[in-house]
Length: 205
Image (tube, rainbow, N blue to C red; front, side, top):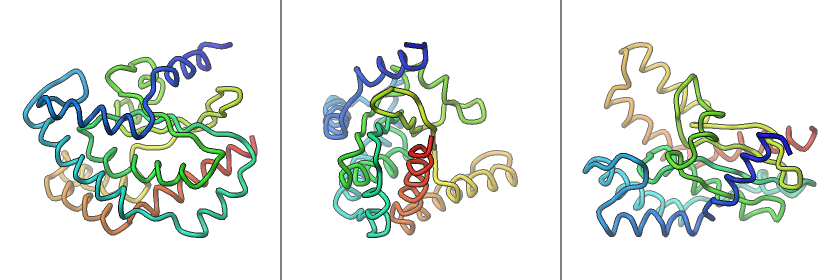
């Protein structure tokens, strides 16, 4: 077993199911804490907002029939190994969508690890040198070989932030509001489509 598959195995062994991830974040919030190495009122506030957001998405996200049809054609077993944190706004918008996607196929499994507790894995999946989350590592379940990665945002959402930063030098409060509106309007469709394409490509490897 090479270092990468060993790392993936270790990461999966200490991962959360979606249900247990939600319970872990909620239990910390009950004590006034957030996940991660850093604690602050802001991070706890974001975590509280995200919990409300995820509760809503759990009830409202639906997988379109065309996506269900594609998932129904999967032949291999795949694990969606996701790096997340409870305070991350993008993760709150995306991880519930992944959970809905996984529920539609017996070929898929969702495992969630916390970024700050998994430095080695995170450092293997940086985005332009940054520890951006959520990050999905698509793993072939039988071999534990990574077959691709995705994140931290769907393409159009990522472009919105890239364009704003290019224009202003920083990500503006307005761009953050625009991003939340984008997620609300998109209803998880872009995330589902992009991850389904990743899965289809992995099937052909």
